[in-house]
Structure formats: C-alpha cells, structure tokens
Length: 193
Image 1 (cartoon, rainbow, N blue to C red):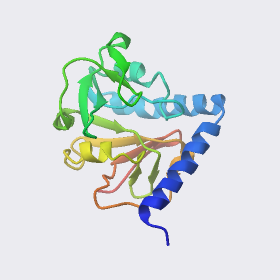
Image 2 (image 1 turned 90 degrees about the vertical axis):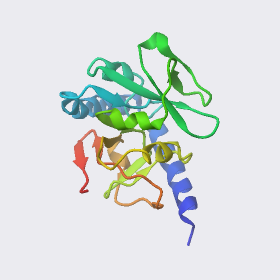
Image 3 (image 1 turned 180 degrees about the horizontal axis):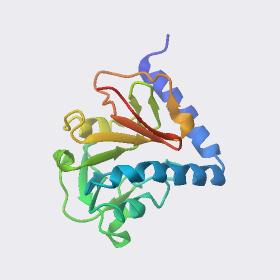
C-alpha cells in the first residue's frame, strides 16, 4: 500500500489535471454559483481572510474584488521564506504585487497568523474536501500551519471547491486542519463538530 503522502500527491496531480481541463464556460458557471452560495454567509460579517485564486482555482480571478465589495476588511496571505504565512489587508488592485511564489499578495502592514482569530470567516484554498471536512491543499502545509493558530470554529474555516472536488474520503494526517464547511456550486455543506 502506498504511503499517505504518495496517495495525496497522486490525487493532487489528478485533481489539477481535471481543473485545467475544465472549459472556460464551466469554470465561469461554477464560479458564479460559488459566489451566489457564499454571498448570504457574508451578510452580517465584516472581516474575512481569504486567498487570491490563481489559474483554474475556484473563486476565479475576480473573487477578491467581489469579496471586498461585500465586507469591510479582506486579509490575504503573504508567503514567507520560512514556509509560513503572514497576512495583510487588501486595499484594492493598487495594493497587490506578485509575491515570491508568483501569487498575488497585498503590500502594507503584515500580521502573523494569529490575526486570523479576529476574523469573522476564513476562506481557505483547497484541491479537494472530503465528507468529513478533511482538506487537501497543494502540499506545502502553509495553511495547516496558519490554521493551527485558530481554535476550531472560531472563526469558521470554509473551503471552496468545484463539485467534482467534494470527495468521499481523502487521506489525512493528525496535523491536517479540517474545515467547518465546504462551498460548492451546489450549496454549502457544514460538517459536524
């Protein structure tokens, strides 16, 4: 039997290939539906930590500007050379530059991941989510380390995935941080605590 890390690597490869093979129309349809599903969750909150989607990632290129029009404060991650994340506030397109991993990151005052505890919601990236809330990331562990500073459900951590990425099961390690909910084009599924 393959080690869990090998299974995860193979699953990531398969999922990334499937994402890239989606038509522009399918991604646009699912992106619109993801935003529609998430919007009611934003009605009574003011601060969200999120991610800037790249390429075929769920949420689409316009996700952060869309989110910023609905809440008062959006925090985005900054990748550090020590494999941790810092966070800074999105202040509009002029506040973004290409970070060390080629990801759009905000400029301005930075905070360590403890700042996440003051947010109303965290929207984390994922390659897939399983039926118990296990999250498969890209494999660097950045979000698992950052989310280890956040108590369970305070604030809630949501992940956005395409419907084909909400799976029955994903290998999980003890350090892997489960999410409280998954947002797909079909709706929001909350996991039991």
